[in-house]
Image (tube, rainbow, N blue to C red):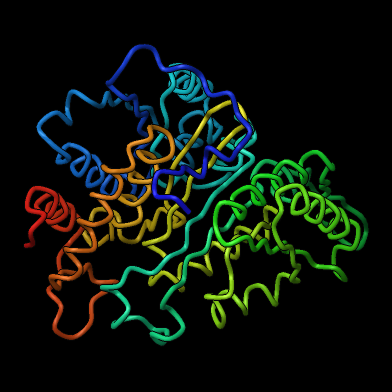
Length: 374
């Protein structure tokens, strides 16, 4: 795939025009748990891009999200936060979000129809030697996981029914042909720009009608894009993601299946703290996040790994603003820090120098300032 091609360009969209030139607008949701710490490290990296960094980017901060917001207002996505996000999107900006608990991400995706979640899965060379998986399993891994985000089981209806035998939990959900077709079309376009291989994830015996619809839409999308299409039941897809990852190119999956596979992808890339993603709508809205939770047990200890949040910032710069060079500089700076032997505790092995979240962010900033090495 060409280095200057943005995955988000392959989503049929009419993004709002950004008024004038720079600064680029970034809405920041710090989140809860370790969110404020890893987001802070990411913003320090943004400032370290160059002397004009402060002038090129305008940062606006939103309020509480997730469980913290729910404790204050009774909802994980309060009206004032919806208004904040709407304002960022209307001005042509994008949102960098820390972790939020409860139903925050599901409500955010539903409210702004962030139907397409893109999860890049690749392995940084400096981490291969200390990886739990063998080098021959990891070399050449380059996967794009495309997850449907605004429908399916996470956006269904649920509740309890009572009887003399006790409570019964019920949950109802559906997929429309349009909902499946649009995400399959995006995945097929991405595959056409890469190696031309599209894998559609289903569960034929467990979800017969849903799987049939995904199969039909997958075949149609692949034919229109001129790519090869195959199908795996989700359990086999999970196995292949770890055992035969180099075989995979673009994987498209329903909401629940994509969620599980993205978390499993954290093993593939070297740790859950390294996994990141972008969530996109058809009208230009975009939210970038890590794929890990708030890690409440690590909050305030300076032990969190900010790499995934830093990578999500790089993805934001590339996908929403077309700043591919700046994104590559950030990714390269993180790799050079690892090459120099610096690690947060979750990635450390014998001989590594262990640092906390704050210092890791500072080291990435130093690597940006000294591209020749640390």
